[in-house]
Length: 411
Image (cartoon, rainbow, N blue to C red; front, side, top):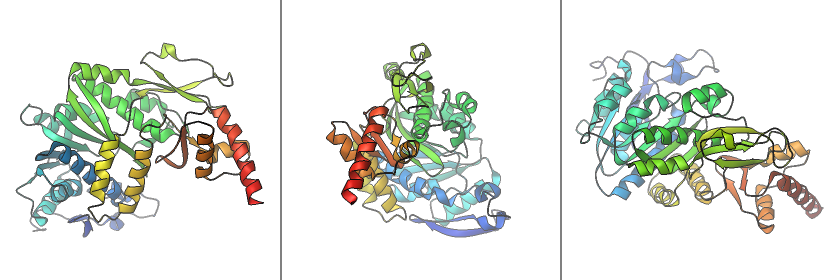
């Protein structure tokens, strides 16, 4: 069967989740350890994204459970097809999966993998441009319940066609791997792609999620659709957003109220959110130290997690044996904890480096903040990060107190 579908490059069979698939043998396509193997292979496959795919399976099952009916799914940038095949095998209630890749070799490999997993009746493989494929499913009775866009780079080129191909109440899943623009290294590229300015700050990964979500909200608004963010996370080299989209101009208008800016002082680390799309409202000087203020946005200031959805995902991970199960449980526990936390976070290592102080345990500092009457939460974005409504000045003062207390206790 392998010969019949013209796979003429080195491959190997791997197991992931409950499926086995034929993938490019990545070691055959690199000449030095510094080369990025997935981009060198004739068909894109990244083993590091297994965590991404594991979480997608859990989220899609949670979504299907909330609907309590059979669903259809599309993966327009499928590569070897591993994600779509896992959806068909591991998510109960999936009646049809359409997987697609414009790369002829990826198409051939995906066809082979569908046959090998005996899924020909439920998984359709296409060989089209992703936007063309999505547009062909834009008619009311052809649309998908869920679309998972996982590109090598930004997902924004596919947002318009994906939103049109999504049913009312459908789940749109987006990955962004272009972290340099989203994290402030290439601000002009971020404005061009996502319609918002980024910043190089310690909480840039949360900014990345909010910039991606803001771009999605504004794009959906053009189609008179509103979005609810059910889940999002940052891991490794990417950010990921799960959003349910519903028709209605009022919903779209409500989304616009969630757009705004985050202002940041590079001198004292003060930050705060400013609602509204107009930059005229932005202050020019820091309210804490009087220095020049920087800003990120416009971006999404609304919720980026839904606690009940996280709970459904936790229930699902407990039913399965996943390679990344332990890590996923930790991510979900942290996200459930920060659902209602303030926007942005402080990284203790960075603050202590600035103050020339040793770094206290995160637990000790959170306890100290709460004893002073402030909100304080850990965050999945950074293991040394703390979300709090305390001011930057007060945080620095409290850090000195906590470190002194810890030193005395140690003696």
